[in-house]
Image 1 (cartoon, rainbow over the protein chains, first blue to last red):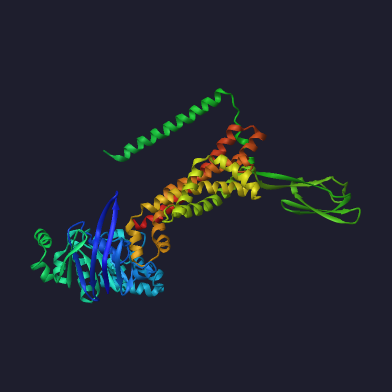
Image 2 (image 1 turned 120 degrees about the vertical axis):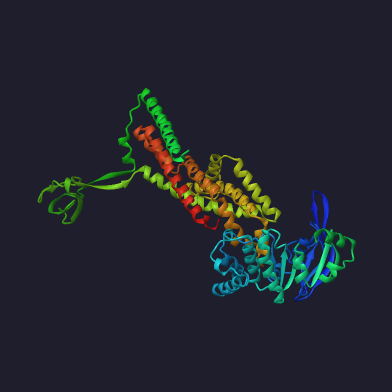
Length: 244
Length: 319
């Protein structure tokens, strides 16, 4: 589904090179839930953002269903509509109602009719449990509700894969559960997911595979049982001692 | 402490200060022995135009038909041709069979006409309105170029903005009228509107740029991650939010434009200011007319700021 080969992203900050992603080769299979964990600044968010081309690659390749994002001829907009993304800060459109947030891209990008787009939108709002808020504006919703709308908005495009960039980090603790519940439901339905998170419980319960990153490198990868109980690398052991 | 009683006192103080200022002005004009002639002002808004009808040829009055305020006079000319005149009944003192020589007065009729101040106000209004719309279009396009990835577009927009902001509007008006007006063969009114629009456009561009840059990056990223291209994201997501945020400074800019439009009087466009000057030359009511002109500008700008405040309230529903 998604294959990265020697993926590299270098930022230049005040003449200093920062190798945010430093040669990552990975393969995410269809229907798989992959959780990316690691300390702050390890490049996991940047890695995720490379997967839908929000960051231009410095080197290496990202293949999504065989299409290479590093190829200049690739139509990024076409690729992105197949890759849903959920952000830490929700990034809902504040000037649009909840339903309009879900409808807009369906109409403009997928060229659906309004009636059809609204039908899909309402069904998804029901799925994430906030159908009663469809006429509200994002500012009138709690953080957890906003994040669930953001998930519904991404799903409305019927993506083949969903990327989650620390979806619960900006939430009050009591709202984390409702968002994780929606994500678990998605995982059960067989959605291909790549999740950057600090929720170790979620990783343990839902992940098919865990990627552990540090300093832009893929340090360790494996099943949750293997990673949480018997990590091989010293850096991963240290990290787990501190977070668990 | 009751907040309301406090407010009442402050209200009284405000009114007192304003009253003192007006009193001071009144005393000052008393000292210079100025004769106020406010009664002369209204006729420059609307006036009764008296149109005197004269007989076109020698003839005899054959019929007087009174229709209330107006009277239709029919005159049979010596050459056999019949002519009719519609006049005010009050001025009709002819009798049937009365003989009229050519150019004799048949009567007169009054017609209400807009005076120079009304016409000037209207010219100022529509010149400002057209210049605002064109200025907004120029501003949005330039603002978008200003934040574009393309270096040439960025540099061209910066050059335009710097040149316009760095030179006086009065000089720009002269250049538009004398240079561009001559080269492109356009009249004074298109030149005036063009200069105002290009001037406002430069300021609007900077306001729009600030508005676009104030929208969090995540909005563009979210739009792009949904598969929208840059123009779609700009049209549906970024610009609507930027417009809402920049409405107060944009309103200020367009209020400035209304006031700056008074400068077009230097290229002989008869706007409100030029009309005021023309009226003064025939009345010598210098103080009255300038106060009236100022008040008329104030009506225009105040109405605009009220409209913008209303739009702002409408857009605030999503806050």
